[in-house]
Length: 194
Image (cartoon, rainbow, N blue to C red; front, side, top):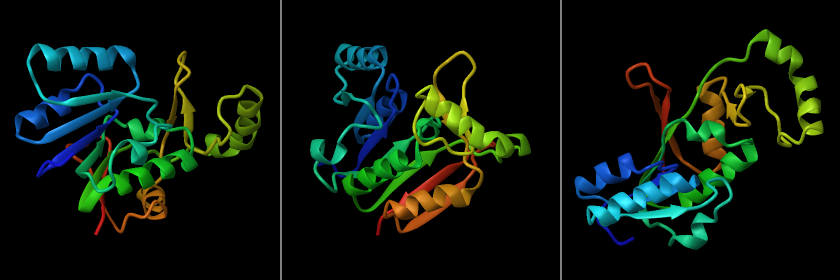
């Protein structure tokens, strides 16, 4: 991407934000793992002759640095609490490291996440849940705050504090981290490179 202001949307869904920012004059790339969402977005882009790029990929395992040039994007967004669906701290930090590498100097990564303090019950039962989860191959790195949605094999990691998100961002190499909560919705972090 050689645009003056290029945006990268991680977990782009059907492309709502990608199309909106393209209409504002940004170059935009969306990455999504759900086939139907990518097909819908690509179809809409072709039908309306909108110059955007959509890539179908496993969000947590895709090698972004190999696919894009380093320092390609001014901004990366990880909205719709998708960051909380990455099943381990290790995977989340790896993703943030890659996002940092594809950001231009002075670039920003906007991350939306779920924040909820673990209940006493969760804290008490977490060692047993960790063992039970390994027996069922849920995922190998259960953390306090991980929850399985009822009837759906999807994990959601609830961060107990802003410090927990900040710790991951710092470990990934971001130098500045700011938090905000827009209209009482799930909190956001702005991770910046210098």
